[in-house]
Every structure is written in structure tokens, then in C-alpha cells.
Image 1: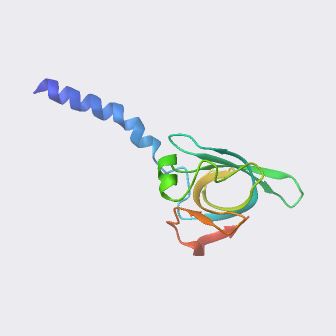
Image 2: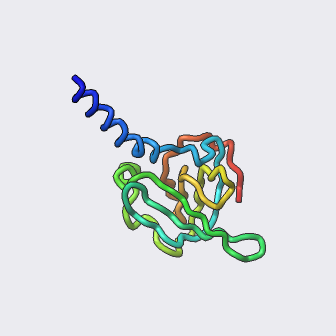
Image 3: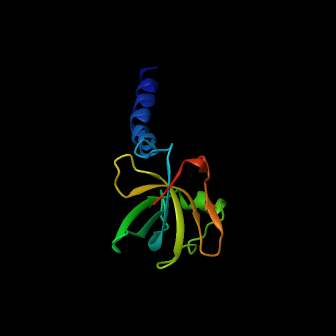
Length: 131
């Protein structure tokens, strides 16, 4: 009995970081910000794909946004491919921004230059704030 209890506790302790990793606490999931910019890097990797987006500021400089996506496996089921985004592609991206106010977020959806929209679309579009 004690061995089973010890094994169960050990498994729970080992699994805790994995559960914490999937927290969305760093993102404001009640807010959606719309960004228009150019793809710098699209990294198709586990456990999450990543997008670096150059968003032009009013003064002509670029603000570099780091955007977290879901896993490639989930993206494939949403219609994505490893080649969906390429450096230089002009896109409109909607993100749940970081709570810290830094230039980063969790992908809500993306609109490609040809009008195709991909993403999870789980929040209300009425809360959009254009950037």
C-alpha cells in the first residue's frame, strides 16, 4: 500500500510541471489585439509553434511580436501546414496579449494575404483592439 501511495505521489510531482506549462495565466484571455505585419520567423516545433511578427509603428520602426501557437499536431487539424507562413508574408494576426504589456501573445487567429483565416477563434471578436 505504501509503495503504491509513494508511486502515485511521485507521478503527481513529476507531472506538475507539465500541467503548469500549459497554463494561459500569462495571457489576457479576455482581450484580443489585432496586429498587421510581416512574418519574420515561423517555427514549426513541439510543444508549440512560434511566430515572430514585425509590426510597423507610426514612426516607421518595427515592433517585434513573439506569438505562441498550439502544437503542430493541433495546427494540422486546423488546416495549417509547415509552409503556411513564410518570412516576408503580410498577415493580420489576432492575439491574446501578454498581461505584462510586452509585445507577445497567444494566437487567436491569423488572416493570410489571400483572405484565408486560420486559428482557434475561441474569444469574442467584439473585444478587438487594433494595433
